Image 1 (cartoon, one colour):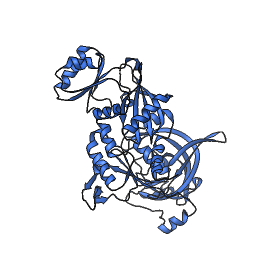
Image 2 (cartoon, helix red, strand yellow):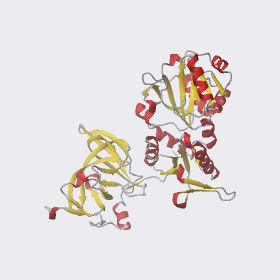
Image 3 (spheres, helix red, strand yellow):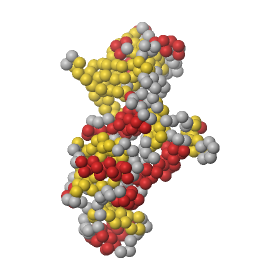
Image 4 (cartoon, rainbow, N blue to C red):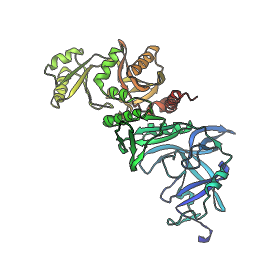
Length: 456
């Protein structure tokens, strides 16, 4: 019946008595199927032989100091696709929602909604048969004043005062970026996602500045985490340099990132520090193709474009004729190329060591899909946990130190000559290594920043 239904505006305040959340602002969205509640520090556990989940919530938007600890029975785990197309596996709970004088149980997924305008999204499944929505209205059930809001939450735990940290990157929906934001928030820091393309600089001897969209001046940051994709290395490093000029601590320096992106220079640096690599030749559109091939031991061999990234511009030439064809093709582009001996005994496998602040915090073995020699995860490779040797750890740490990187993904290959270094990545992805090892790599990155500020 119409008269029995609750009439809501497009935004309303509601509460969850079973979760000890006295009030929270919700976006009422009949276009969304499922309801979602902001949650961080999410962890499943067993209670009375049943599956439960515990989590923390900052119930007030733009306030990370007020924290409520919650727990609820676990209903399900589901893959949810966001409006931007990002797919995420989420825990699902059930709890009673209180809207005005009415309450009923609803299902909600748990996810970090810090980048959203609302801590709560009320979807149509929760409203079906009970609610009518007037999208032109807001707060038909009333709204708390700032004073009453503070009174309601006066007994909530106050998170310790943290650092102001900016994540300088391109895509807020990327797994690695979401995890870093989440890890910083979980450790009580004020996290800000800074889109590289929306930053611009004022070069001035007395008052240098960095501006953000709308003319906002980016100041008073304690630390920056640069996560710069290869295609915007130049501009991303220029911004990082500007933050350094403002005396902001950068987890990886602009110089370290720049030299890590120069394949030739990075290999020369590594060799100068005594790190073994596969025999490599370098040329710019060589005339003497035959000698270049002989230089690295003949075919099969790897041919790489110097500017290639993430496995792109990398070709396996199995015969001398194939090698000549590939090199000559790259010649026509007037390209700088690397040729490198092919380590057949590696059998399409390499080792990714994740180094943070001079320590290998996790390692995985990546294996190429059948018919492929590149073990990159995004090219279909698979990841598994592996115990690395003391020598492999030593090489990984030495390589990161040679490149002056506090955070590095160091790729090593096992050969008949012993472990050889393939590449050092200054913005290594987290999804494959966290998924395989179940380690909080993002949290380790935040700890490295805390260590710099002597925060325990």
